[in-house]
Length: 435
Image 1 (tube, rainbow, N blue to C red):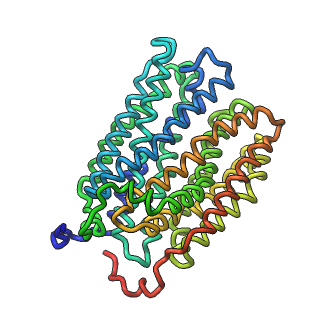
Image 2: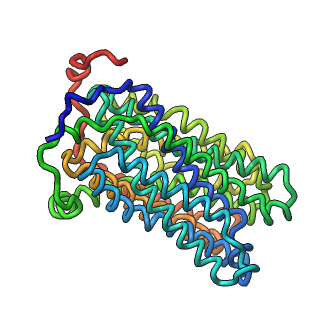
Image 3: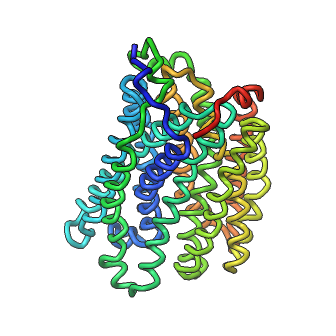
């Protein structure tokens, strides 16, 4: 058994800040690829394709990252359940950061031919592998240190990381897009955000070097020999329900941040700068409201907020695509904002909800696999399916709205079958004061 007496409980604000920063860096790596796929990778790496086929091919390499994420959650989940949550944070950051820098160094198709998209595919797979381990380690380290009555609040900070990473990635792209010519951006400008990932990875490693191991892990007497086997054998239904429940969150996020960016610039003729600004403004609001929504989860429960978010998404998807199709910045922003509010109603509490659904001995594997399978269902296919549906539609891509609404209803049904996990309110008064 591990000696828990030697472990000093960390300051929750410090731990939450370190988890947020690390998650932001890893999601920066992941999102910068999605933005590049929407804006420039098609012509550079698939020049023999038509514009539509090139975009679809670029989104296909984007989707490979999601396919790799469940594999990463299995690999790093095994480490997290056997060796601790902390080593996962270091290894996943190194893998994702290294792969991202390498993407920025891959020559275009015109220089090395078919090897270019192949290298892109491999590196995107490695990105997804690393990110698949990141979420489980960062969330569990925070959630398992947090007081039970405020677990939703503290564990929501890693959930702000994706918003920060997205804003950072797209902010860099926005500045480059606004200051460089089209030729300069296509030649070398798009590579700069990928190279910057190396600096961010070093910063993330420094931030995480002093984090203490999770007390729940240190208190375990008996670790699972093969965590995945136990998860599949004893918790398969839970994994499938959480994956199905989370699918709409991923679908919303990538419909807004990836598909709509390509659709707005290519089909509607809206400038790249305007589209990025509208999307980023909605993501700012989403990130800002994350801890507020998480507090509601601590008070009223995780499951009610997840159900409310799914219901809101089902109602809003048709209005969102209608507002997007106007090409008017304010209306597009309002469409994106409504979608992001539905998204964060669910995802603000997920970082507390998923760990509470699993026993500590398999928690890192179970929670991460369910979370990342949801990414495959909702995130990997959405840009590809939405692009194809929009191509066959008219001015307003109603098919995209129908597709997203169907996923929202699926997720609603999955969450309806899951139990509530919020600790009883008396646990709040029993907790010691925070540092």
